Length: 92
Image (cartoon, rainbow, N blue to C red):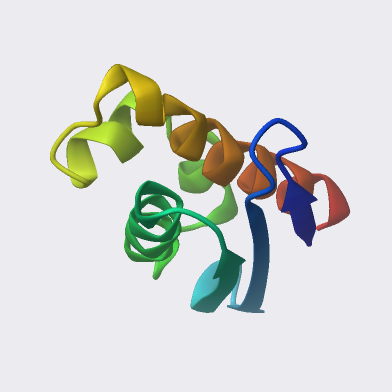
């Protein structure tokens, strides 16, 4: 699933492999700012080995905590990552 933030041009593509109802593998390909890369990477760590039900309970705050916080000007990166996750979940 690929998502683009039209305001800043960041692009995030997420792919997953599911085994026995759990995310066995997750990868990302991103083009954008450092916070977008950090959020995408942290999201892969949050998703790995979780069930789809567990993934659906993850929040943007969980992601921000995982990256150690974001300055206000960089919060768009967390929205991009969470939007990509939500779009991916809709396709599963």
